[in-house]
Image 1 (cartoon, rainbow, N blue to C red):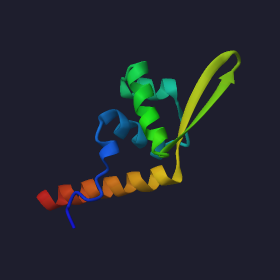
Image 2 (image 1 turned 45 degrees about the vertical axis):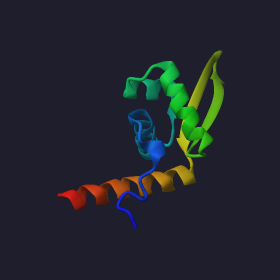
Image 3 (image 1 turned 135 degrees about the horizontal axis):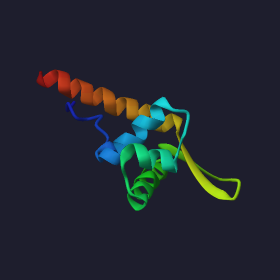
Image 4 (image 1 turned 90 degrees about the vertical axis):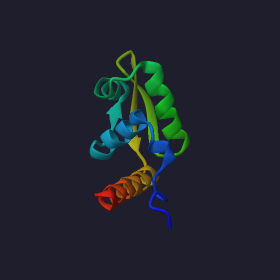
Length: 98
């Protein structure tokens, strides 16, 4: 078994890694919160959240607060499990190279 077997290609990009990291420690985060914390543009963040949603790693909820649209994200059970496997694989890789 390769040392990088459980490293998930979907988490390779820093924005997707950041989105998952934020959602793992928060019940949910809205678009503006993610944008601010990650320093991402609207289009960049939208494309990365769409990739994670397509893989069923995050859940997207659209609603209105007053008259303003609000999009919020939460991590799914599958997303949590896959992200934990990814982090564990990275830790094994780091510890193996020390």
